[in-house]
Length: 223
Image (cartoon, rainbow, N blue to C red; front, side, top):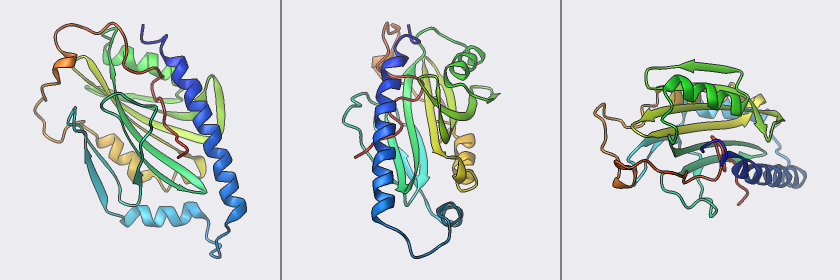
């Protein structure tokens, strides 16, 4: 069952998140900027004018747009195809992640929204024709991560959920407005026609998920 495989990834996510916060704290103590302008204000200004880069997944062909000053990062723990991650980290950390989950229980859009909203403790949800939006305070293993939020879009394509998630500090909400709009407009593929998915997700349904984690495994990394 898809629900049962969610908890291992959440624990792994928690470890990555705690290590990231520790590293961020060390960074703050070692380096102070001469400019007194708060980072969220600087980031908001840069985000309005920066060029957006395009990433096209080599396996599924989905397209993601991310700010040019974000770095693409890898996670050696993630072996599955269809995963990408982009990050800005300078005291505050903003992470944009995309990945693919099998729809093992053949959930409808409404059923998927209800399930993932419950698991993520989403305080906002919006159903669309072929997917849904979820957002709210970031939770890990049932505990709220103070001062952090998530914004996610799930798009249903054949037997898969294509997912794009943004995690960010609450004080950077205004700064990430452009990224949230990009996620709102996300259609998975840039062309309207349906893409034929790889044979590995062909006629026979899978019995296990390629992901050990929850709806958004491995969002934060430390290296």
